[in-house]
Image 1 (cartoon, rainbow over the protein chains, first blue to last red):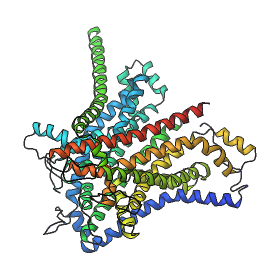
Image 2 (image 1 turned 45 degrees about the vertical axis):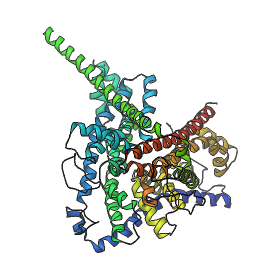
Image 3 (image 1 turned 90 degrees about the vertical axis):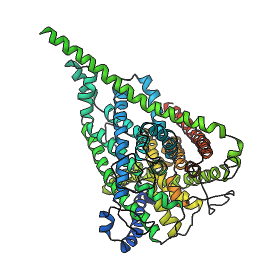
Image 4 (image 1 turned 135 degrees about the vertical axis):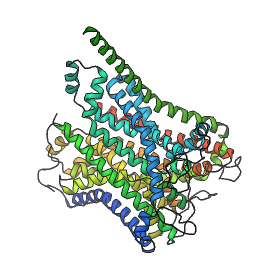
Length: 308
Length: 290
C-alpha cells in the first residue's frame, strides 16, 4: 500500500460502548498471550533446569565430553549431544543450500510462469510431509543404499539422517530465497541486460548479490529448523551420544535424547526427568540465537527495497 | 583480436548453459526425492493396507495390528487444537491488524510471534510436559496434548489470519466508518465475514500440522499402548505419528511394512485436510473478485 492509512476512528476508543471496550481488551489479551507462551516456555524450562543444575554443575554440563546420564558412572556433558545436532544440521545444509538456491534461481529467473505454478506447490508438499515420514524414509530407504556404498557404515548414522533432513529443509531455503529474488527490482535486471549481460550473468551477478541478505536469512532459518528437528534424528541417527567426526557412526542429537527419555514415562522429579529440560534449554538457546540473527537479516532486506 | 572475442563468447554461452542445467538439476533433485519417497511408501505399504488397519487396536502381532486408537487420538487432538487456538489466534490477529497502535509493545509482540514460530516442536513438548502434565496435573491426557499443540500452532493461525485481514480492501472499512459504525461494528460486520474463509484455511492448515507432529506428543503422552477408544478429554491417548514411530523402530520387516501403511493413512488424512483448505481458499478468492 503506497499511502499510510490511519486505522480506526479518529480518537482512541472513540464511540466505544462499554461492551465494545471489553471486546477491545479481550482482543488485546489474546495478542499478549503470545508473549505469555514464550514466558511459559522459558519458565518451565528454567524451573526444571535450575533443579538440575543444583545437582550437576553448569561447568560440568558445558565442558564435560561424556554424556552418560542413564548408567554409572554418570557424566553430564552436553557437548556430545551438541556435536550430534551440529553435525547432522551441517550435512543437511550442505544438501539443502545448493539444491534450494538452484531451484530458487530457476524459479525466479528462468522458469515460465506456467512451469513455476506447477513446481512451487510440489516443493511445498515437501515441507508439509510429517517428519516421522522422513525418518522412515531415511532408515528404510536411504540407509540401505548408503550401506551399499560404505560397507563399514553403522545402521544408525548421521549421514543418512542429514541427507534426508537436507531434502526436508529444501523448501525453506528455496521459497524464502525465491521471495528475496523476486523482490529484486526489475530495473536492476534491465540495466544489466542493457549492458549486454546474459541471463545467467544477471542471475548470479545482479539478482543473487542484491538478494543476498534474504538468501542468508533463508539459510539461517533452515538451519534453525534443522537444529530443532526431532523425528528424523530419533529414528535414523541412533542413540549413542559420542564426540566424533565420522558421519558414518551413530551419534545422538539433543532432540533425539529428549525423545528417548520421553518415550519411557519418566517419573517426575527424578534427575533423568530434569536432564531433558536442561538439554531443552540448551537447545532453545541455540535456536533462539540463530532465529534472532535470521529475523534481523529478513528485516534488513525488506527495508533495503522499500525505497526502490 | 577476433578469435579472443569468439572464445569469450563461446565460454559465456557455455557457462550459461552449464549453470542453467545445474539450476534445473537442483529443482529436479528435490522433486525426484519426493517422488522416490512417495513411491517407496506406496510400494511397501500397499500390501498392508486393509480395513483391519483402521479398525484394530495395536498389537504385538503385525497381522492383527491396527491404528484405531491412534486415528481416534489424532482426531481428538486435531479437533481440540483447532477449537482452542481458533479464538485466541483470530483475536490476536484482529487486535494486531485492526486495533494495535504502532508502538513498542506491538512490535515486541510481532517479534515474539516470529520467535515462537521458530521454537522447535520438541520444546513445546517439554512445555506441555512440565506445565500441563506435571504442574497443572492434567496428566498425560488428550487435553494436555491439545493445549500443547494449540500453543505450537498458534503463531501459524495468527499469521494466516492477519494475512486474511490484510486482504480486506481498506475502502470497505472507510465506507463503514463513514456510515457511523464503531470500530467493533466494522470488524464484526465488514472485516471478519470477508476474512473468514482465509482464517479458516489457516486454521485447517494448523490442524493438519497438529496431526503430523510427533515429537511434542511423545513428550506429553510417551510411548503408550492404548487398546480402548478415548471418550473424554481426560483419557490417555496416542496419535498416528507415534504409532508409526513405534512401528518404524521395531526391527522386524513386517513392522516396516505396517509403518508404511500407517504413513499412507496419515498422508490420506493430511491430504483430505489440505483439500478442505484449498476449497476454502478458492471460495475466498471468488468472493474477493466479485
